[in-house]
Image (tube, rainbow over the protein chains, first blue to last red):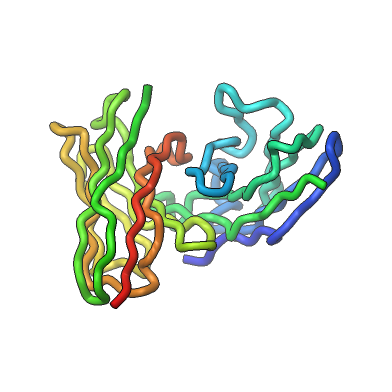
Length: 111
Length: 116
C-alpha cells in the first residue's frame, strides 16, 4: 500500500490560516468520505481532529476544518495559535475499505 | 472514560517473537473494529492490522503479512498482536487504536526494539 502524499512542512504566523493537503488515488481518498486528520505533539499519542472529511469530534476547536476534492483532502487551521504547532497526519480507507493508509505527515510550525 | 493500555513491548533480537497486549475499558469492546498502528523513531504513522468486532475478519499491511497475527478476546476486553520473525524495520512504538474507521481513541503506545 502506498502512503498518502502530504507536504513535509507548513508554516504560518499567529492568527493566520494554513492549509495542509493530502493526496491519494481513486482507490483511497477519492473512493470514499472516510478521510480523517490527526494532530501529534512530540512524545504524545496522536489525537483525532477531523473525521469523515469535515466532521469535528467534541472538544476540537472550530478553527480546524476539513474538505475534499477528487483525490485530494485538505486540513485548514484558521487563527493559528502556538499550541497548533505539531505534526499532522491524514488517513483514509484503502483497498475496498478493508485496510487503512496514512499520509507521511506534515510538520506545522507557528512562526 | 475510554482507556486503551498497551503492554508487552521490549528489546528482541532479529528473528525473534513478541506478543503485544492491549487492555480496553470504558466502552463496549465487542462492538468495535480495532487496529494496531505503529510509528518508527522519528518517522510517520503506519497502519499495521485491524480486526472485525467478532474476530472473523483480519487485515494486514503487506510488510507484516505472514509474520504478524492480530487477535482479540472480547470476554476480557483485550486486543493482541503476535509478532514473529521480527526485523530491524519493525522497531517502533505500537499503538492500540479503536477503528471506526477513523481512529478516535489511542493508547499511550508500547516500544518494540528489534536489535542484536
